[in-house]
Structures are given as C-alpha cells and as structure tokens.
Image 1 (cartoon, rainbow, N blue to C red):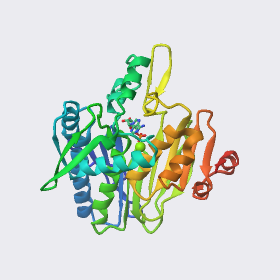
Image 2: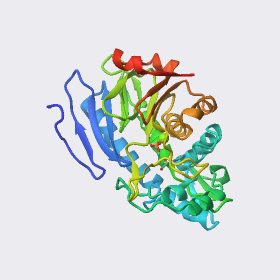
Image 3: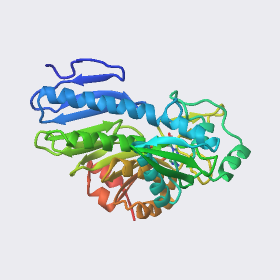
Length: 349
Ligand code: AMP
Ligand code: MG
C-alpha cells in the first residue's frame, strides 16, 4: 500500500494511512475540533485496524460526553448545577472532575475548569474562529468573578455501577474541560494501546501528544512549533511522557476595534491572558501536561515558577509576544535546536 493512501472514512472521519515496513502505521481522526494523528509501530494489519477502530469509538464517546456546549453528559450536569439539581456522571467524567479539583489547587487557581460561564461570555463556546461576538462589559465580568466558581464546589457521591451523583453547592459553577479533556483522552488512548501487543505508539492531538515504546526501534521524536512560525526544536520522548502546548495564538477573538483576545482566561481577573504566547510542558501524563500548560499561560513570566513548584514541573518552555523563547535548564537539555535558536534562548530560573 502506498503511504498516505486513504482506506476509509467513518462518521468521525477515521483515515487509515498505511505505510511501508520502515514506517509506523498511521491513522487520522477528527475529534475535539482537532486532527488526531495516531502512529503504531510493530503490529500486523489486522491488529492495527482493530486498534484504530477502538480508538475512533472511544474518541467519539468522549467528544459526546465531555463537550462544553453540544448536548451530552456534561451539558446535562451543567444545567443541573445551575438549578441546584443532582445529575449523574460516569467514571471518566468523575475522574475529570477529581483531577480538575487537584489541578485547580496545585496551580493556585490559575487552572480553573469551573469558569464555563466566563468562557461562554467571552464567546468561546463555538467552533468558528476568530470570534467576533461583542466583548463582555467590566460589570458583567465583575459579576461572574464575584460568584467565585470553583471545581471544589462540586460534590461527588458514588451510587454503584460506575455511576456517581454530582451536585454543586455554587450555582455559578459551569464545568468546561477544554483545558484538560485532550490530555485525558490522550492518556486513555495510550492506556488502551499499551494493552495491545505493539512495539510502541504515539497519539498526537494537534501537537499535544503522548507516546510509549519505540518507533521501529528508535525513540519517538516530536517537533515543538514556534508560534511565530517554523519550529523551535525537536524533543525525543522518553518512556511514556506527554508533551503539551497551550497557546493564545490559534484560538482567539477579535472585537470591532481590532482588540485580539486569547481563549485562555485568567480566572482571577476574568480577562483573557496576554503576556505569554505559548507554554510547552513535558510531564508523565497527558492530563497533567495539559492542565499545566494552560496554567502556565495564565501565570505568565512573573508567576510561572509558582505553577512549576505547585504542579511539580521540571520541563517548561514559554514564548512571549515578542518571540523570545524561555526554558528551564531541564527543558534546555531536552530540546535539540539549531545553534541560531539556542543562542537566543533565555533561561528560566
Ligand atoms: P488549552 O488549549 O489546553 O490551554 O485549553 C484552552 C481551553 O481551556 C479554552 O478553550 C477553555 O475551554 C478552557 N480554559 C480557558 N481558560 C481556562 C483556565 N484558566 N482554566 C481552565 N480551563 C480554561
Ligand atoms: Mg491545557
């Protein structure tokens, strides 16, 4: 089969791209508004096809259950929160809530998935970019902030059969897992692939990825994109590491005066962040890397170390609006760059 040849396209658009013996088998899925690239190494064609179909179904289910504005499990829960009712949640949604509570705490409130109302008011509950909705007034923002939505307001009660009852003591809580859903989905995908007899795999959701094992005997390698164009360098993945980038350059809004605003909101002020252009993290899991990258964009250059300490991060890369690249010493040792780029890197300490 020729590389890149299309085998089939299903509802969620699964493209199987078969490769030569020297290349991993590849498939593409369109979920979470992103193209997810999956590469598998060391399996026969039947096993590869079964693995891809399994992941396609899993991603489709997550897309339906975790979506912040298309009707599904999460929108039902958010409706219940707003009216003081009880709703049910499955194991995966409960794990997202528990991890959110943990990361909200360790990030010092910079990662806060309970600010769905703010995110919606800024116009980000849409798939059409750039957003051109009118921006909220200062009073509206102040009101949304004064309600102090927090994932800690959510209570969970196990009722058996992998089901929980969930309620919120604060009606202002609206969960939006846009900052970690991709990370958790990538973790679950890797977990499922590890259960198959593969040499290795990488699941790459629009530059956010996790891998395990090897690629035809070699380490998996990934490029870190430069928000201003081109790449910053190459990272070799060790073990089952995840590499996630959060940026304010891909999804944004713009008002009629040309004011451009990011899709990441500082939960403390209610305003979109502006100083940091992108944050890249290497961590042990997709969910922690995803939450950390979002929290670091909120923290910016002045507060990044508080997040790094709280979330136990070693590998941090930030870029600012002027295109300056900042890295921790540990990250610097992991990114292979041109001498030209390396000379310009500013050390974070
Ligand atoms: P990411 O690209 O992982 O940084 O996620 C960005 C998405 O997370 C946004 O589109 C929102 O859905 C959501 N989000 C925005 N600001 C925050 C925040 N401060 N904490 C948690 N989630 C956020
Ligand atoms: Mg994130």
